Length: 172
Image (tube, rainbow, N blue to C red):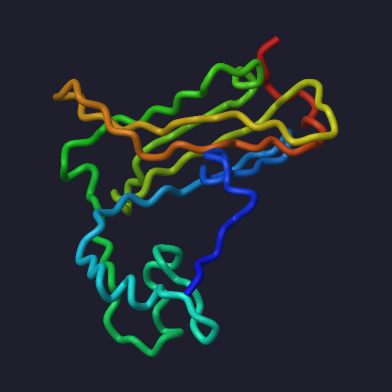
């Protein structure tokens, strides 16, 4: 049986999550942190095997096996309780971009649900073209008692065209 070949393979940038925010507005992003456990690769690969009567599901929808009338999930997600594990500091780093200075960012571990990192990004670009502007970012968590830093998410903030609210604080 022949397998599908893609004439236009995806670029690495196509696999990175994008979070959109309109210029002059605020985006609120919640990043859940989980351990991945109980991966039954034989069942997972069996369910994902493509044929004309069966969709390809390999690692695309980890928990969506109701389509196949399977009661066992092939993957279980276990919450990472960040504060219990000693994480107490969250930081966001933007890659070199002339637009990063116009993104006002806040990030913290959620007080009620400590497996979630809340990120708030306000875009205040003073001038804007008609195309979205992508700025790469990485969210980090750290235990202040240790020197090790963990990366939580690498993605893009896509700033969409829009007017800035009069009097918005953006760097000159």
